[in-house]
Amino acid sequence: MMADRKRVEPLLRTARGQLEGVLRMIDENRYCMDIVTQLQAVESLVHKAQREVLRAHLNGCVRDAFENGDEQAREQKIDEIIKLIDK
Image (cartoon, rainbow, N blue to C red):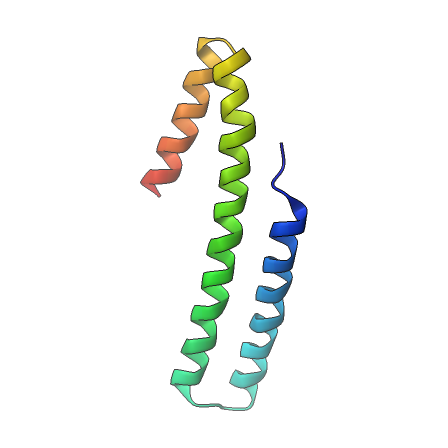
């Protein structure tokens, strides 16, 4: 189950727009702290999108593996989450 596109796509489109703005700021030699502030805003949006995708994965794929899958499928989903946490 893919994340709700209506929730993820706007976040990523906004992040892309802000990132393009950051590139313009760099081209214009804007103040460093203003650039950092905008980069933090981009990072926040990407993080929100990441959480939405993960939420959908947990509510869909992981839930399905635990309700309908075999032991190997459950172990695989657990391993995926552990690897993600370790990053």
